[in-house]
Amino acid sequence: MVVTGGASGIGIETTAALAAAGATVVIAARRPEAAEDVAEGLRDKTGNPSIHVQQLDLADLKSVERFVGDWEGPLHALVNNAGIMALPELQRTAQGFEMQFATNFLGHFALTLGLRPALAKAQGSRVVSVSSTGSLFGPIFWDDPHFGFIPYDPLLAYAQSKTACILLSVGIKDRWADDGIVSNALNPGAIPTNLQRHTGGLRTPEHLRKTAEEGAATSVLLAASPLVEAANGGYFENCAEAPIVPARPESILEGVAAYALDGANAQRLWDMSLAFLGKGD
Image 1 (cartoon, rainbow, N blue to C red):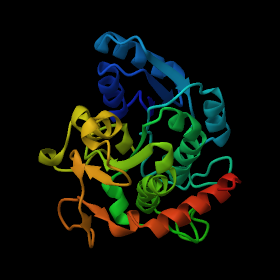
Image 2: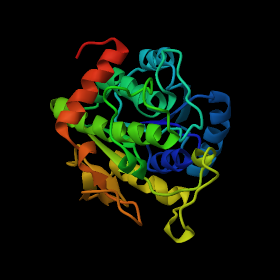
Image 3: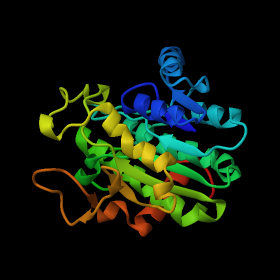
């Protein structure tokens, strides 16, 4: 199994739980030296020596290509967990893509696409994408996803990227079922991590917060549990499929917007993303 960002935040607990269950886990990390320290601690904690680290910078498509090119053998689960949130200023990748869209979604799209043969080889595999209630704040900005014309807003950029993560699972459901690949997205909940370093910390009331272990639970469920082996193209929170909501809730943020599960939107995003990568279908 692969967990992107598996050496920080809920990624650590996701890696720990999967390794404790006996999986060989590869932590895909931008800073492999720091990730190796975490991996060593998890090997001791879980008693599983098969926790490895491999370099991956999701904002750099060349790094994604190297990761894919180095992969050998089948892959039973890919947990697209890594992410960034609410960068205060507009930043772009070397390829010119808005940084949150590139890191949270487009890099994962390229990674998932490249690892499709390995996922198919497992003859029953899962792709899990970590989204957020942030998806309730905005859809895909089809004509200007990289904020060339729309005034940059940190939350809107984050919202778009997290909506895209959900649509990725819908796109996989519509294309790869015959390969034995299923895919679902999730909201881990409000967990205080480094993800909120640009927002002044977590502002969710304490009684609505989760621990990192609780936040990782839905990722682990979707990656490994037989209870959801038939689930495909869904959006989960609190270890259950979330309801579609007609508008963003005023109080407790929960549920998923219809635009994030729409098949036509998933098709459009898939085609647009292939064009960004310079690939055919």
